[in-house]
Image (cartoon, rainbow, N blue to C red; front, side, top):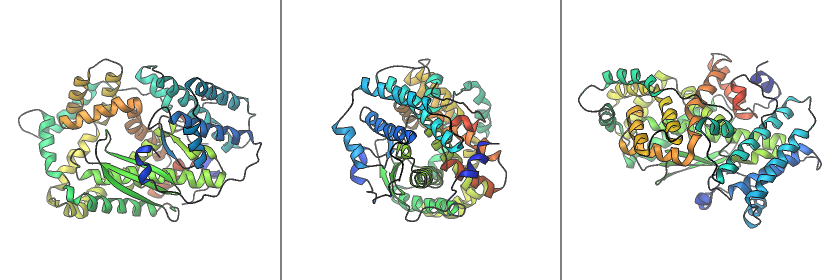
Length: 451
């Protein structure tokens, strides 16, 4: 039986915090605490894992993407820090404790053990990287995110560039011609909030047709600068998020739906809410109080957030919505929407090139200047945006695999389950509510991810 069928049969299908955003943090109300046997070994391991992750987060800003557990655990990580040797020993000890647990006939308990083992393997890898260890791109990605990528040669993308040449004819480099064309589709800064509020509301409405979203769920949106990313969701717990949109560079009209779905509905905001609702609250699984960024959980999170865009807006549906609703709000000419959309569809075939460029740069095969030039050529972006993409690679390294490869894996898994919209949304809900690992999306079951 496919893992989706197994988990769906047992699932309840209802329905980061950092110092930089502490002042904007939505304070959660008192949450119902799980009633668990004090001596349950797996629950004790989960509790220790959360506190270990918080301690690691004190060694690397941004390592903890989200936390909504007891405040005194977060305080203890700050006031009673552990050194790197102690943290390494704690990772090894928890991994060994997991191995020693007896097998269970409860599939959800076994899935939970596999999840914790995979998260601990990633923690062990990141712990070594914090101390200066360098790994080849593919090896690093596999140990952190649970899948070994296979970057394609950049020459594979040359035919795509040739096709786009026909969409943007003229003189000069193709990237400059594309940038000149797209400059007519920038959302004016004084209309950003209106356009994004409208787009996110539509993303939510489409998600709400299929999911029972938790009562009282909400988000706060901020526009920020000085980031290497275009958007970020900081989950606050209690079904609240802080969504930040980076305005360092011009924001094109298509990014409103992209970021509305990816950061909000049915993306990161919904993913974290369903984990809190179905696993932390309903099952008392404390390990989901914390989300370490460098872990297999991120491939599921980013892959599902990207796939959620096309799940919520099929091609023609999205064109119609942007043309009829968002273009007028942004003061753009709706009659030109089809031409812009055709270019964006063509550019989607270039997404895999970003992973190849990141691999070459991180493995020392190309320089920073070459990375910027290749991003400009194969992502068809301006020099400033290409530099921002290289900044992201420097900061987050192999994390880049989670967007393109993650989306492909999620899409294949969900669409293999059925072709009706209702069934795909139900498969998506199961994916967002369960301890599923990247290897499960490939149909592979590894008995012990910690090995």
